[in-house]
Image (cartoon, rainbow, N blue to C red; front, side):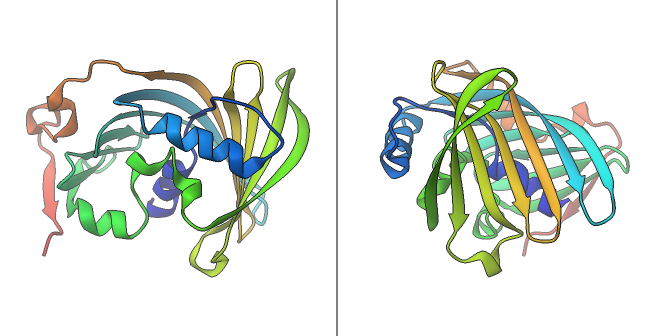
Length: 214
């Protein structure tokens, strides 16, 4: 679950402010734009392919972000943070794991950083044009400089030049597991109730709270 959560955090939606064949320049413009977002409401669909075991799984997700707070609904798991604590609720077992947000952020699981992730030790490469769902897109690859610390070796971003959006992302796993993400919707500046970013037990009747905080 942790690996899936981490991949999800790294590969949600992106919106660009300009197009050029300078990958670093383009990502710099994206970083500046992303920093203006007050709130984010996005949905996506994903397809995971395990090349070694010939296994495929399709899922969908919904994320809400405001400042350092987030709620990530993955169906089987709901992950909520108020910026101080993180609640990870497992729907099948009705268990909720409580952790310090700082600890999970140190492990690289911070959805509030998804729009500037390339600032953290990535090499970039402009790959040219590729078709995605009948759209002529530009592909930019991101390569982590410390691959031994990552479960993936490449992030592929496919940018719709007309809409100035990334419409497809592919995470190339180091162990033969690839995950593709398609952005279904993306909104900024939406009103989000404060209660969204805390685990309200009345919404999860009978849930067992497992406190992992030190």
